[in-house]
Length: 322
Image 1 (cartoon, rainbow, N blue to C red):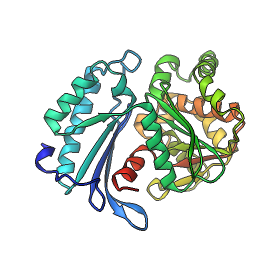
Image 2 (cartoon, rainbow, N blue to C red; image 1 turned 30 degrees about the vertical axis):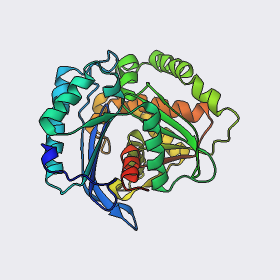
Image 3 (cartoon, rainbow, N blue to C red; image 1 turned 90 degrees about the horizontal axis):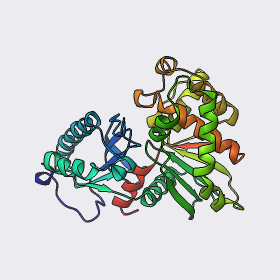
Image 4 (cartoon, one colour; image 1 turned 120 degrees about the vertical axis):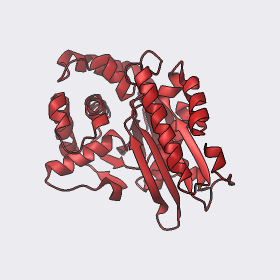
């Protein structure tokens, strides 16, 4: 049990910490310690495509197979934390666990089996952590940018700059939800694309109302699908791409739209054969691509950046007292 190996600390400053981002698709474990020159030094980063929302995301339940995958992963994470002299642990659960009727049962069982206390956070708090992570990547400027974080269960939008957040909100339109609702054939059918765009018009009306009249310099995609887009763009150009060495990536709008259109018109086997797409994203990347294209066209934004820092780095900043 973790309680037998963790020594409490006052905020984790100066000590080694473990952050878990327990998303709808992927569970991340990041063990790190402060670094005066580079924000943090990574000790260990594990990510497992748990697909917690598979089969039940729109029904508000964690299905048995997904439940077991999640449990097995967190028992493993607990063992790894116990091996790395960690001073403080913070496990954050987001959309799938927030909305699941058996989410509390899952968290109670994790506490019993792995000694990990999971904290479910609101979408608003999730957006705040994402902003702090993106700030730490150094890509925010004085001009306003719209940050978008496409998760499996929810999508967070933050309009802000290096000094402040102007608007933030989480919408329950994540890739797993959109895929279950619209992507039943492969390639995705044209009428489903039209229906998805109409659905986004309706669901995201509060976002467009809130940012109307605000200057928006560009779009910043935090981690997730945007990391895949960056890898595919570079591979298409014949370049190697080391995501571990990349905090931010500037897209050419035309190159990004080419990759997006390729993904939208591909089938499962074609995507699975593409180097640069991790297995958990092979199918969800289609609706993530449609959402990204929709935002670029709706807001007439051709300036798109990727930040590899997101929620877990925002939590790190909090634990390090930054």
